[in-house]
Length: 512
RNA sequence: GGGCCCGUAGCUCAGUGGUAGAGCAGGGGACUUUUAAUCCCUCGGUCCAGGGUUCGAAUCCCUGCGGGCCUACCA
Image (cartoon, rainbow, N blue to C red; front, side, top):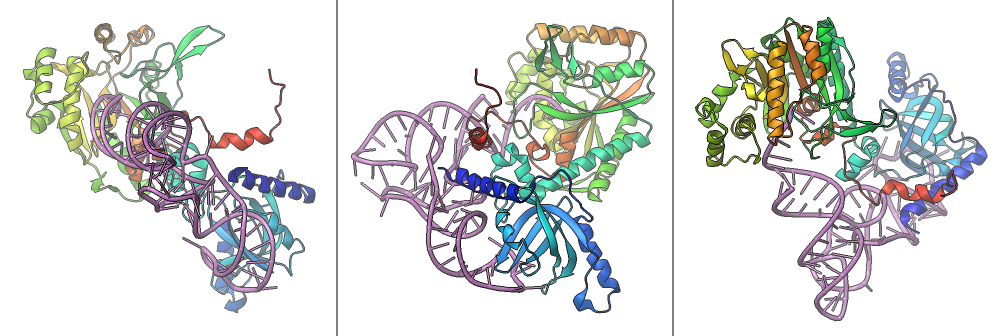
């Protein structure tokens, strides 16, 4: 019998013995104090005590998972951890009739214990247990308490074990929650309304990416998972909402890696009567606010880099940056052929069916974007790259669009939104032509969206921010998978979690 | 997608051609203020999978699977 099976069998045996004594999975528990509150209660009692040697706080009942056991004959020390901290428990055989039942407790079980809090000789706040019970019996062994869980694959596939074993995993999850909460508050305070728009769509637009396809059985039709939030949020501007935002999951049918997850969290906001310059100022404020709320500073440490998120950020333009960092003025290479030739000279790879705009973007990715370590706004993109943005006055080859780069990564993307329905239709038709020419990452013609625009959308500034990227930036994490609780993983045949489960479970239905 | 590296006990890791190991966890025992408790004993293996080389493979070679890092597209 494999070892893991033996360990599980032993724990199942203990579960049976606990069942004979009571319910090791009770429906309700009585917690009067968290571990942190229990310790605080002792400290408060110590402040007013006259005899510092024998301080006992009021009785407490705490709950938590057993993380350590030190059994010493007629006494035992156990540590339990709850959501906010850890506390030590002291069990004595001369106090507890059921002391021997501690044999049935393993690392990982949840206990409810009552007693008074005192300080041991070595100074640790400790519950002198007067009553206790198991409130959840775990039947699988926990990861090593001291070394933690280091196997990266297990940490991602069984994130609950990572969270159990590694403080850092808990911290990242908490900081991510703080980032999202701060963003919600930031927009709320500025009069933005949070909305939710469809994930399942007749066609997936608003970005240049391949969508996932799914099927609706009752309607017997294929639907697409959204790749952006943009086109529906703009419909809301048509409907008279002036400030909206959405924080939602989008899905892009691309590879998985430490920099890509097929689903990721996107923030988009749209503000009527604002332009992209105003959006840029808002983004500066947003990032600084997030950093201050989560970290207490706008100075970020990330690898070897020190980044300041204090406003204002550096500003340049797409064309100037490419001239400055690569010596390339793309207005001198107006045809696809000329630009392709240049890219090959500079050893920049691009797909055989890449358009002029796609090749240009490859040049930017190669020469310019990695240079922007400190937050830098890149303004005024070529029109060909930006089918949903408004053209600059007197310069139809460029649009009012910026992207924000930090640490060489794109963090934000924003436009003065295109609201001329005739221009929008033309641009979508141009995208469709590129698609017909073999580029499968283009904007689609969304007739329903165009009808909405034809009813009139006010001038507006729109913004998109990849939340996972922001969390990476704030936490200093290098891999996207560290900031996503359950990152997408490839199938693995021999799933660890499946084995014992199959053995001790009776099939609910006769096998077919 | 390309390059490099990794996969050994529940967990953390040794072991580079000659009988598969250690610590922790688990089981038994001693121990009434320990805290990575300590001490004695002990159970525990599909060495990722398949094929090959060899008298002999965890070890060398090939293929596959999974993962990591770097790189590319993206956000």
